[in-house]
Image (cartoon, rainbow, N blue to C red; front, top):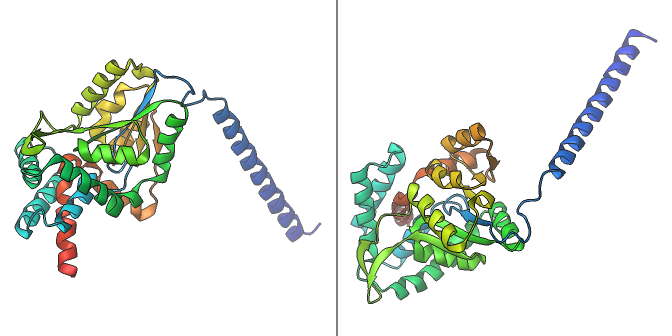
Length: 298
């Protein structure tokens, strides 16, 4: 056999061996995966699932889209838009929850709805969901929630967004219900004040803990899903924490602690979505910024 023929034969053999090795490895991995316990466990009524909303279930922030809808309906003017946009930009760039700044954001957001009826905002929220949110639900996360429902388990959204908005989204997705930030109302009219604090960070964990006690759930058998390191307290409560489309801090924490990870973003899109993931309750001003941009283009 000539030298060239010998080299060609060796390369072909190496290629075939590589293919065989790859296929064998993939099959071994598949068999290993199949030997894991089924999750979620069908019929385990002491288990449930808790899903963060912004960038976990839905692309972007619920308040971002809600703000767009309210601006379209002339709930606030251009001057307020500029203030909200600045607050949102500061919050995202700083990446920290300074108490004074967060109070300003809450005050601005609440001023939008002050004096309006709860049923009026609920009706508008239904319209805004259809206009801006329905097409932004992550199919992968939706499938995860449906797996819990199909297993006979309850599924709740847990979000810093207003509880009214969260309830609308949960209902549209066929989920059990929602935990969200509660704005005070008297005789069905918003006062412009919160009941307690925004459901954010550690407050989410406390809400999940309280709901689990009321529902007689075993948190060690429950699952939680989030994109943000702000939700590590909530994720740490359950036996099955998932990092979904995680920001960099949560990704690192998940890897260090062996948490399951799912990322439904790809390429540059993932980088764009990653930055707003930590925006939390400040996301309301994102809608203002978007509305400013739309106004300028027009």
